[in-house]
Length: 174
Image (cartoon, rainbow, N blue to C red; front, side, top):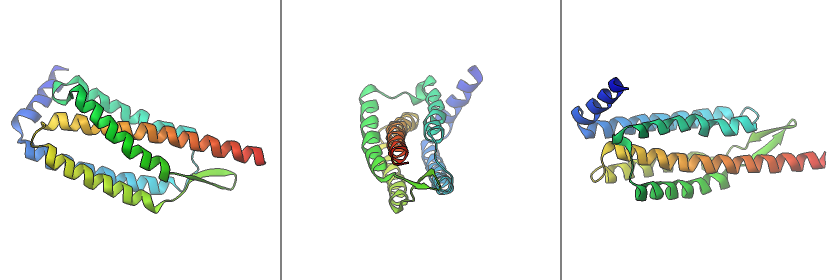
């Protein structure tokens, strides 16, 4: 653990914050593009409760960043990040729907998803540029993780509810 803390200290003390901001922005753009590609491919496979629940569970490992002081976020900013995440999740819940094909459920392709994804990328980029002048990079990373987690968990719960409603209505009509 000490070696990892030394590495984190080196990153935050020796590398100018602008490089961290630019690097993390490119990484986020790459991850956003990958999310779009994965989502497009996933729409070709049937959805299941397991495939709905696993992404937030995998993402939850990111909470380990809060073991390090550099990433800890003051409570008012935690509340702000969660509220913004909840707001974004509402849009995702509304635009994520399912359809039945061959007795299996699939995520319905949505043109709104690409617009939402790139809008979120742009909003995040602009917010990062603005906030990076008043909030340190580690804390900002923690805030954006909280925002993303606060968005994905309600979205996936909403997906699960829609999945079971559609599944139950299909079973009733069969």
